[in-house]
Image (cartoon, rainbow, N blue to C red; front, side, top):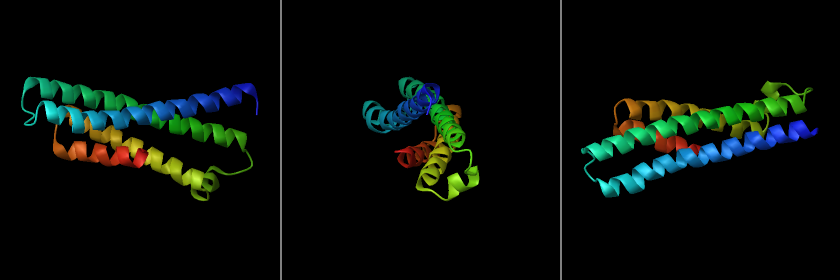
Length: 134
């Protein structure tokens, strides 16, 4: 493995790690902190904090998606003799990457919905996505 390839793999893994940490942090902030500060959630502070958390969630979920795609690209380049279908469907690594991609996509949609108009269903979907990513 060349030095550039190793650096690319390191960047992809760190981007994924930090982004997953961010998605989980957003859900934890909304669930554990914001509910304690504003239990009813109707005040301006709660709405602003929830909307900003959802925006940060979108950004971090996009980071998860990009990190997963970079990892797939890196692995495909390192193993040119193995098809991407075989890599994705015939290995535990591929299954975990597919779950990461799915979790990131669900998180993006859920945070987008929560950003548009805060509702419990969007935050529940974001919570499920963060559990899948964890």
